[in-house]
Length: 161
Image (cartoon, rainbow, N blue to C red):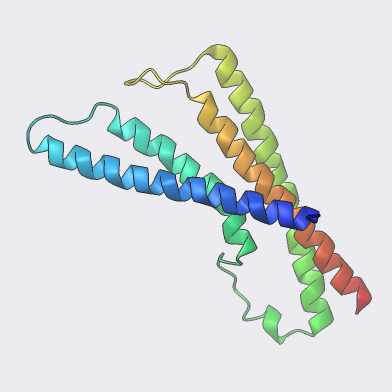
């Protein structure tokens, strides 16, 4: 049986795979558009699609990047502190990050519902915008869940020392 952390890791990896596919699609679309522009045949809506794919890339890669500790961390000051204080700072940071990204996920979801209700579509392709906003909310929600798990782990480590 898989632990909740394993499910989070699998979901993060799955989301990251989607982000990778979106990045590859963005690259191929941009390249094709540039080449076709040489023949006066640009791909309509490329700018919109690149923007939509960008939201997928960023929001779907966040959780995996956090799992792999691939984010930028400035530890010049913190690394000189005692281990227990370092753990306490990590716990506090995980908690604040969970709150922040949880709020972002909630607001993105609410905004997606509003946009879906209004029927807003992109200008050139007339493509609905709300699915990308729901995807963005899902990416931030997954990051929030991961941060809760990290918070619990770091809290236990802080208390046990």
